[in-house]
Image (cartoon, rainbow, N blue to C red; front, top):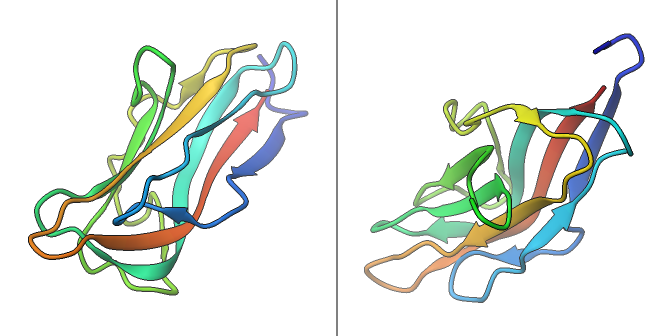
Length: 131
């Protein structure tokens, strides 16, 4: 394995995803053929402040059989609109940084739960170094 010609790729859902009182869209990505990956970052560019005081909203990186095999970013109550919330804010969100070659990676987003009305919308992204 060689990092000398590694390729950094940022995957994004491309649309606002509602992790509050909507139904979050699930999405996936694949790396270049034959390349293994290193999960570098999971994040969201927040456009609506999160209200999820009972259970945080989450972005999970995994497989069809294990939603958070590689990572789970918990987005807490009060994460403000215009914030970029990522691995710097949830420092233990990467569970296993090693992504296998030639495998579809699933991104599963879950709604937060609030005592009042749930809220939280943003643009999700995942950064991977392929080598």
